Image (cartoon, rainbow, N blue to C red; front, top):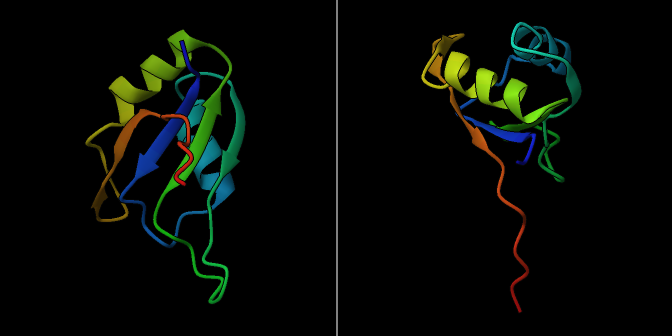
Length: 86
């Protein structure tokens, strides 16, 4: 099972350390990435969080999906591999 999570509907105020702390309550966090817009540098409102095990990833989904954080309801699910478009 994939251990990389997609986290949508993020507040623009959240930082990587905030995300690591929040997801760390459900297991060991391997990495956190919050993409930014190339031109403006502004956060794009989503993140990718990689957990150590599939069980920890599932625990994070169960614990955080739908949770209100900084006034926004998180959408947490397994990340799907990027598909190439031609």
